[in-house]
Image (tube, rainbow, N blue to C red):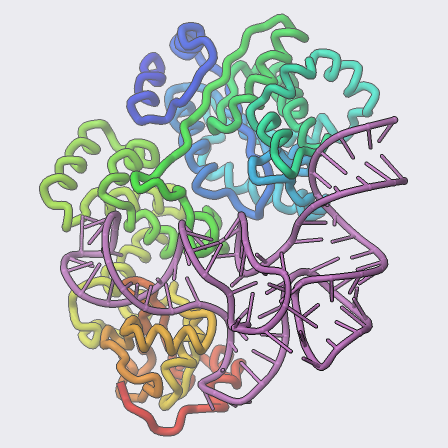
Length: 445
RNA sequence: GGCAGGUUACCCAAGCGGCCAAAGGGAGCUGACUGUAAAUCAGUUGCGCGAGCUACGGGGGUUCGAAUCCCUCACCUGCCA
């Protein structure tokens, strides 16, 4: 039902601000609206923050509206001003490569068939050939310095020690230019984005009003938060990446499964497409049986399926069940075990290799000193058995199915030591470091 | 172009000649308690088993000894033009 999409989005907590809500509601209920959201290539992949935007695009498309995903081949070369300080410019080659990757990523979330088929656009197409003089005459004349300086991010940066470059200051004009261009080319009348982009969205709304005499809309999503006040989406790898190369589907699934009780219901509303009834049932489940973590599992399954597909999700659920299940690891069959450890960081070891080295090689700790510290703190495990000595070694008897020993730091940082003998030739022969200095003797774990 | 201030570990920030691998806070990690959650308390956080090594923007000096003093370069910020 197209008519109710705004209410649906509100209930889900996906709307922070809109321009004239009455007019926007009328437009959304009156027919198919062409809308857009921009994604700047500031990294090789999109992340959790962009995911909210992608989900919003999807909701609107499902409601019968027509999405345009804009990749910022041009704006990515400039960089929008952040509070934290001036950006380091990336090379044109880098930005071009990232633009391509991101365009491919975005496409997975949209439907390119049917009457409201999606489209991907690149703002480099209309800015690359724009001369500085034309830009200043045709666009710049519509911008008032007072308004530009008053933009929150700009004002903040001006008052900070770092200040702000003309390059980043100009960003808002480029984004306004995009909205106008998309309006002229495709009849786009709504731009969506994160709430921190509000000023940049308004830039386009104002430009179109001044230059074209037409009123268009803007709508933002709120910043996703965590109940404990820490930053949403912060992980060891920096962000929750949507690209499987930057963050494995297993790690991605684990991120969502680890959602706090206080966060999981709001996140279900935002990140899953489950119905109101289903989400309310899961909210009850959290209240009544929090230990079962039913809502967290549902959230993780939905989001992982959306981003990585059903097959990858089934695999990581099976892996998670095996690794975090209460059953004895030794009782797992070889195939299940191999699948479960497939995603884990691994170390190739020969029987007799030290546990310290295996932990370092698997990347579970950054240094040998840190590995020793982990053991001393009682936070290192081999096959779910606490390692008690810094001289402990991985022996043949520890290898499950004759090949793997499960390494764990703390409660849930996992890795695997794979027997060099049982591993494929390439993996084991390539690293002489492990086999060269095997610990002599020492306690067997 | 001129003048002033700044650059310390993941981040903020103290230190201003030896007691500094560097206070304090944040963040991270581990343990206890748990439910792969939160809260709380405790421990821990450059590399190395160790001797020791490397580090306070880069380089060069002074000194028995430098994060600390001097010179120089780079970068950042502010003010003036």
